[in-house]
Image 1 (cartoon, helix red, strand yellow):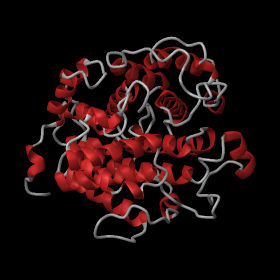
Image 2 (cartoon, helix red, strand yellow):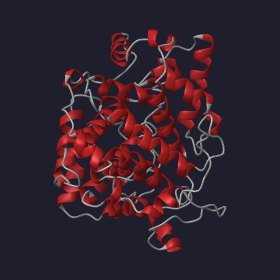
Image 3 (cartoon, rainbow, N blue to C red):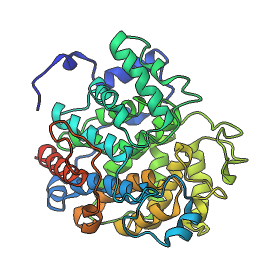
Image 4 (cartoon, rainbow, N blue to C red):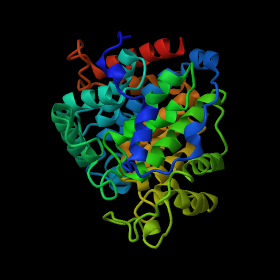
Length: 401
């Protein structure tokens, strides 16, 4: 761990979140969860079953298995080209086993947490800013936000909220959800309500839309709840919706735009009115009860599965409802049956890696990662497979004790 530095003089995440609320710069309902301690975790079981390692490696597995077929394929064209994908396949340039921004930004977060021992907003911002040109497949919103943060860190302008632009129109993508999982690490031994503000602020680096922020709290809570469960004991399908709605109903206070400001508009959103939480509790729950197949639900004839939190949240929840009993089947389903398959598979991979542990992950999926884009300082040029394994192991040893 580092000795205290100038960064230690900056506000804690809880203080910073309160400042943003008091200035009206963050449009998120102040739910009761922000005052609650996360429940204690079964640390011995997490160690024995390598569940923290499974959580972190699950990100890289989902990302690398999906990344090669994300951009030019939807599920139907992907299936015609590859059949059912069950292993790494080449991308359009013939490269195989490549990670992208999902893994890069998640494991850079792990690196900084190991260095600092806790989440530090501007420390992580500086990391992302300094490496922004290395990010593979970074979204427009992330690119613009990090450029604005670069100006803020140099010149103290724009202010923090100004780095995110008009949050009602920008910042609803899934770029915050994809890198949330490492934030549980500093809280494993000493659970604290700071976990919830850490999740909001880590997302707020690049995505300020209240829908994305509420989803961040909902998913970090789901992940914590999963870590509490006995290894490989999957919850009932409705639990995923029940728990998500319980947490986000106080946070997700603004109705979705009507009509939904996305192109194309998935059919189930075309005449929907209400919040995303309302959608999860209504049409999504109803779809599962009617037995709508995952691929149909995640298509544009359903709720979609593109890189918008409005679509990513129901897509991830539906995969988990259908496949939480098996890490392998969940990853295969996410990779094959969703549009933004690398990010959705990375989110699902973290959640179910945390539930089932490292032993549930096929060795050949880990061995097949062959890119060199993480570029951890002091280990330039190392294979990403070796780096993610090393960082996952170090994180488990450091934060589980």
